[in-house]
Amino acid sequence: MIFRQLFDNETSTYTYLLGDRASRAAVLVDPVDTQIDRDLQLVAELGLELKASLDTHVHADHVTGASVLKERTGCEIVYPAHSGAIGPDRAVRTGDVLQYGAIRIETRLTPGHTNGSATYVLADHSMAFTGDALLIRGCGRTDFQEGCAETLYDSVHQQIFTLPDDCLLYPGHDYKGRTVTSVAEEKAYNPRLGGGRTKQEFARIMQNLNLAYPKRIDTAVPANLALGRPA
Ligand SMILES: N[C@@H](CCC(=O)N[C@@H](CS)C(=O)NCC(=O)O)C(=O)O
Ligand SMILES: [Fe+2]
Image 1 (cartoon, helix red, strand yellow):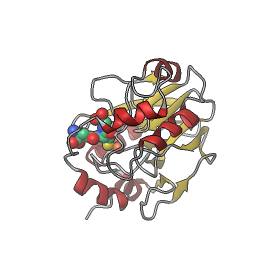
Image 2 (cartoon, protein in one colour; image 1 turned 180 degrees about the vertical axis):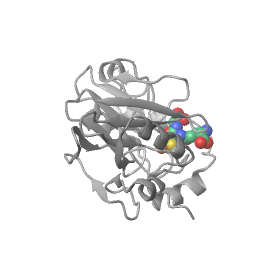
Image 3 (cartoon, protein in one colour; image 1 turned 90 degrees about the vertical axis):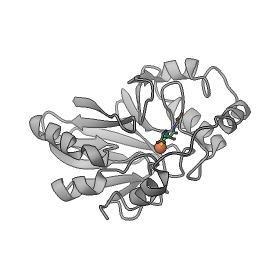
Image 4 (spheres, helix red, strand yellow; image 1 turned 90 degrees about the horizontal axis):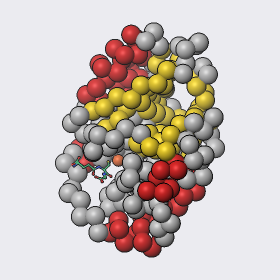
């Protein structure tokens, strides 16, 4: 499989490109609207054909590239169920399978950062794209967008920590230059969710993060609920 990890410097967002060498089918996970030219250039240079744009959730900090990618390539738009986004081609639930050429992706709903959050898992369980449910040594905040710490705790424990220890985890963001982690690492070293932390301890940690109000949330959320359609 072809795999590329792309980064948007302005919002510290990762976009992932997965491609199937034989069929040339490709998907983008969490494309950023301002990086579409970069992403489509890479798709073309690698001789791939974009089949789908997958969002892990309704983002608060950037606008998805989903609609513009669909306009430009005819790809389908995939969102998690319960996200509130209007008009995706597919709204996926736990246990659904997405297949593009030989790329086979299982979807698992991992709410808590938002109501409609998905983790996209390769069917061989070698890699998973966790969005903001689980970040490297951290996790998405739970103080906006229907966030709920108890729900996030259950999602991570039931849907992500049940993957094989050596499954690689690719997050939606990293603010410290880290790129990838694994189930074993996060189970052991995630300071909020690993090392046997209880749900109560986690909820207390999440209540006391004191994070700044996300700069673009008031424009990004409505735009993303409309799948990033340009106004
Ligand atoms: N300073 C950034 C913060 C963005 C932010 O809040 N990111 C969310 C994900 S959409 C989060 O959960 N961040 C976790 C953290 O900052 O630890 C902004 O204003 O855009
Ligand atoms: Fe987010």
